[in-house]
Structures are given as structure tokens and as C-alpha cells.
Image (cartoon, rainbow, N blue to C red; front, top):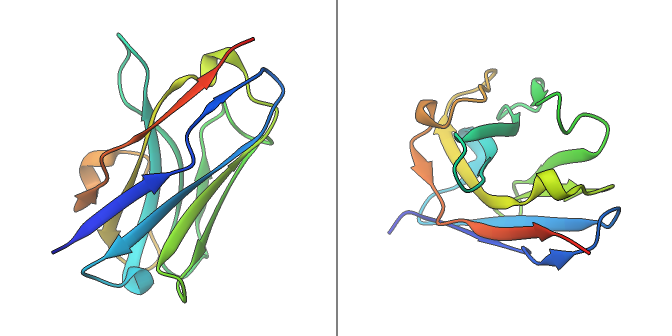
Length: 125
């Protein structure tokens, strides 16, 4: 069974850090582009960051540039999102997604084949 499972979401104070993980099962991530996207209540889904399967292409939304870092560990079949200097506006459910490809990655979740169920990140004092 193909599955992506996110973890690491939490309540954190402004200025704090979190690392989200996304573990894949039922398939290997080696040949997949990977995306983190988020959705806050009443807002559209927003592509946060993506990385191509060959690691040659990365993307960060302007709202997170310099604060978030995406990475992948194909040996662990897991992707990560390191988040620093968190702001209240980062509050959202964060999802991971995987799509077959090599040198591409796009911030649109609908370009991807598999999505996880999401993990809640709340930034509040």
C-alpha cells in the first residue's frame, strides 16, 4: 500500500523551530520529486518547498525563503522540512507529496501523484 505519513507538527512559539518528516512506504522515493505544501483555515493550498529527484532543482515560496529548508534521505525513504524563525502566519496543516520525475519540481500539489494526510503546525505565544 502506497503511503506518505507526516510527523513533527506541534505548537511552537514565534521564533521557534520545527522539523517535519514525511516517511514513504509501498514505494521508494528515489525517482520522485517531493513537495511540502500547506493549508491554513480559509486559505488556498500553498506550495511551500519542493525538491527534484536528482536534487538539482529546489523551490521555496517567497514567504519561507531563508527560513525553511527541504531535504530528502533516499536511504531512509524520508523527506524533511526544517523550519526556523517561525511566524504565526506559518500556522497551517502541512502536507507532503510525491510525483514521478527526475529534474523537475513544481509548487502545485496537483502535479504530484501521492499526498500525505497532513500534520498540524501552530505558531502562537
